[in-house]
Length: 230
Image 1 (cartoon, rainbow, N blue to C red):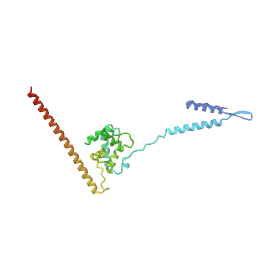
Image 2: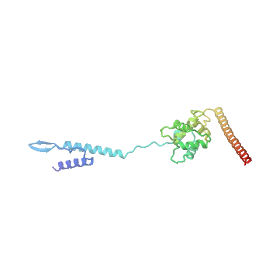
Image 3: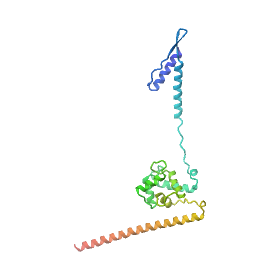
C-alpha cells in the first residue's frame, strides 16, 4: 500500500513540475484472488520514461557545441609567418572599432589612406567578393583571402581588391614557384603601375594648384576692378 501511495505522489509531483498540463495518472486495478490489487506496472514504466527523458535533456544542456578555432598559419600555408604577421598588423591598423572586423566605413578610410578611394558601391563589391559569411564586413580570415586571390592572380586588375593588395606594403609574390623570370617581371610591372599611379597623383595635385592660382587671380582682378569704381 505504501508503494502505491509513493508511486502516485511521484507521478503527481512530476506533473506539477511539467506545468500540470496533463491529466492525472489513473492507476488501474485488477482483481487477484477476489481482492482488488493496483496495477502499478504501467505507472512505474511511464514515470521511469519521463525521468529518463528529463535526464537526457539535462545532459544535453551541459554539453555545448565547440566552435572551430581559426589558425591562419595552417590554413594559409602559401604565406610565410612574416607575411601573415604583416597582414595582421595592417588589419589591426584599420580596425578602428577594435572588434576584429573591418566594416564598410573602415574599409573606406583604408582605401583613402592607400590613395585609391572607392565609391560606396565599389566598397560593397569589395566586401562581397570575399564575404563568406555574408555579414557585410571583413574578418581577418576574409582579409587574408584578398591576398590569396591576389597571389593566385584571381583579382580583376581594375577592382578595388586588386588595388588594395597592390598598394599595400605586403609582398605576397610566389618567388620560386613560377620561376625567377615571372617573379621579376611581376616586380617590374608592379613598380611601373606604382610609378604611373604616383604620376597621376602629382598631376592631380598640380591641376588643383593651377585652379587655385587662377581663382586667386580672378578674385584679385575683381577687387581691383571694384576699387576703380569706388
